[in-house]
Length: 203
Length: 203
DNA sequence: TTCGTCATGTAATGGGTTACATGATTAC
DNA sequence: GTAATCATGTAACCCATTACATGACGAA
Image (cartoon, rainbow over all chains, first blue to last red; front, side, top):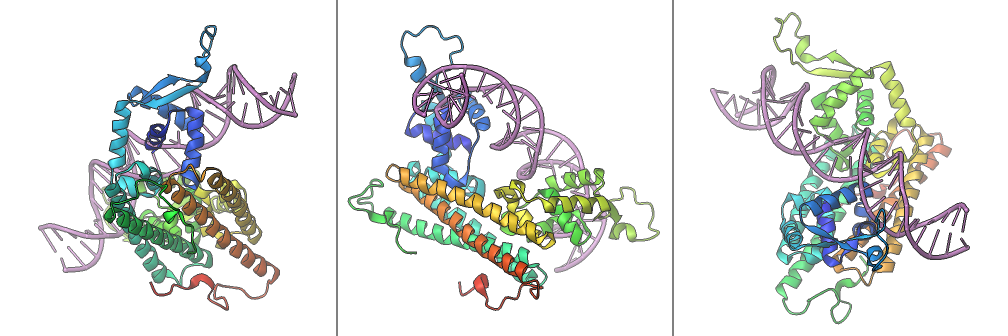
């Protein structure tokens, strides 16, 4: 998880740990947050694995500065060739490991770096996963409605509506993906001639 | 978490492990699932703590059955007096431990056993927590909108809408709570005058 | 000079999961 | 009899969190 997120971000630009965490928050939004307590050890592991290297940052760049005792300047990390390979591998995953609750958001956040076909497969995988869940909850509600207490029922229904909402969202995304897939012209990147789909129109 | 859920369920009726897990699924719905790998050890701990006791279930009830070698009949658990006390303690919590993402659903599921004032405080706590988050995400989106890639933006907006939706839900719940608090008459159960959101219309 | 925030890190702990192992009971 | 599902449990692991410790740097 963190692995994909870090590799994905570093593939856009070299960053140091602190910065990385801010970007993580900004990129994943409500979806997930990571603490330094997991970030730094993770960076260490990834460095050991040869996926990233430390690139001297600001602090050390001060040229002939006296040999700093502690040497605690910023440590800027960047991807190695192996790291890019590893990232490609992670981005190519199109199974449950990409569409389960804990992982989907991170994979989605890096769809910009993901193969279009993989994107669609992940979106569809998640959608059918959620559809199953919707059926399960819906029948569970129907079976037990009368016995359920007021609050439990409310919780079930809110959950059900959340799932339904996400299914609709996914369906829209899938349609958009298909349209741009069958229209290989244009759509080279997010900023096409005019505003395109960026539109936050009425629901 | 599991602790509250288990105590809450056992307070409604004695159950054995397997049953407990089914009920857990049915009660928490989309919100959370627990595996046996956490359930059974948890039961063992709670037994050691004196909150629950094993009550002979079906298998052992078979009267003068020959001394079963393994003796692996169902083990029905029930609350002890200490367990009820512990449950009351957990249900009285009205701080972050009750309204954070991971915990709120479980607390909400047992609102039926929770003091009305605590209910409102938890609902309000969660709502203001979510409102903060909403502000954070909203400004983050505005600040970075132009730089964000298509998918990241989509993820942010979906997240934002989810948060806004939950805030509205909470607001409705809070109002309902207040109404029944100031109108001690009636309201012994769900059946409201108009169907509100219960509507599960055509697919 | 003191406060906030930038910046890096470790140790202890936590709360679960997966995979495995076992066996009883029920339905066909 | 055999498959499904009910039923209980353990061991190994995972991925993170919290709390702590340290220190540089800029602004008030």
